[in-house]
Image (cartoon, rainbow, N blue to C red; front, side, top):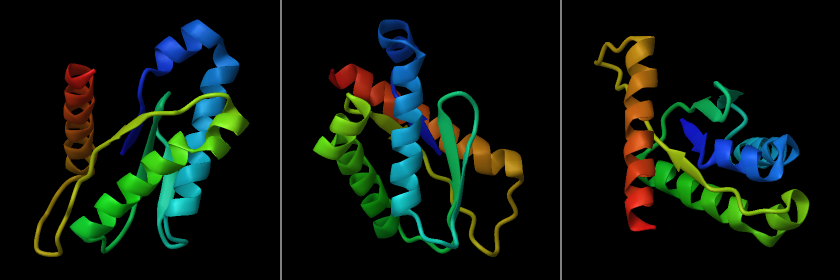
Length: 123
């Protein structure tokens, strides 16, 4: 799960075009970073959810790092007029586990907001 940090503030300060640009930047970055077999979709106002099968912890860390770099890149700033920051959360379901779809959405949502809270404390 990926959530755009400060989306409401972005819309309030710079208008909905800026918010739309942030959404496009995240969608484009996820499309470039995830594999063809993975699925990504917008989920709510400023969130995206992806289904990616058979990722290791190293794969997830790599995706997060590359996503942050892509959104902070000169190309994104030039195209969208701003750096776009996101928070992420992951859920894992191993073959022997039984998790509901709610678990698979709640777990990363909780982790994403914990990451967002840690960011806020460090700023």
